[in-house]
Length: 436
Figure 1 (cartoon, rainbow, N blue to C red):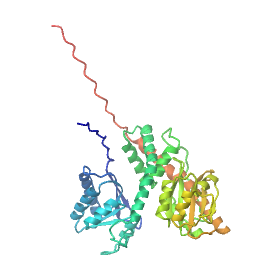
Figure 2 (cartoon, one colour):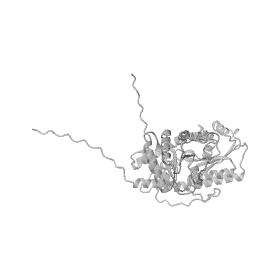
Figure 3 (cartoon, rainbow, N blue to C red):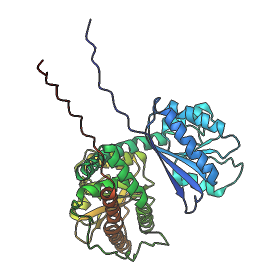
Figure 4 (tube, rainbow, N blue to C red):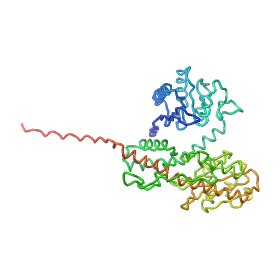
């Protein structure tokens, strides 16, 4: 009889539901329930009970619940069973809105034909739909394929899911290192406690968790009650090319999206993207994109295996690079050239985002499908001014919003009561036998 090898059991991530009320248009009046962790057969009942409590509070407050399931691991059957039971008990009440569910969950909902559950690819799409408030509308969410069954996830959905998973694999070590640093500095009992503090600061200041974790690693450690003493508030920079249009500069994603839209307008380009340097790993990270093929985006997220591409070369040199013909440019690595040509890109222009202190903090790239495309001198200058605007804003953001988030995190951890550690019971001394 052969001895059986027993693998150590994997400890699932704890399942957590965080609630946040949307108070700005277009989704004011919505209650977003952000879920994270591993949802398996053991956790499904606890999740069902917690979800029921959140939904009851939303109904009493007159809010529309939105379930954000982007960070839910596993659980296709468990999610389906809970959604089915919850939808059945909510007959006559507003539908359950589910956003950013993984393809396996969407496939399960499709096969079950659940009534009272609506799926959306992004939170913005769901909030815009709620803002329309058109009763009985038969409009389909944008992610639903119009070529096949409209409820089934498309191949594009699956490509996006794989790309998102690869991006998480690249950022998970940074978040893990930040958790470890917080545990050592503040005596936190476990990684889960550190993650909850990071997530709370990320949500409060609307800073991406990856960006906040990277800042924890590269900022000098605090040595007092205040992490950054003597810091003064800085006014937001006044852009020259980047039109703010009432946009709040504290919202990183909106500002980077605005940078990309302005670059596409200046370059009259149908596609492009923005990558920023993650200082914790000293590498470019994809932040925003438009019109790019999924195969090329996957190449950017994977790194492509090439040591040098146009983005890396521009970052190192600190000056713009234009490639009027991708097919004949001798300086392009072969794998990068193939990724561009396969996705229909024949010309490109990349400009660096150079910080006032000197280092390059990102790149802006625009693509064209026609070979021989060159920017005029005026448009080249406008694109350089746009990069300077992006640099000024990014520098202000790092010295203001990001440091505010770090300061809040430090205050929350130093002001909290220290974890109670129960000492181990000492063994009782043996009784000494008395002489008779």
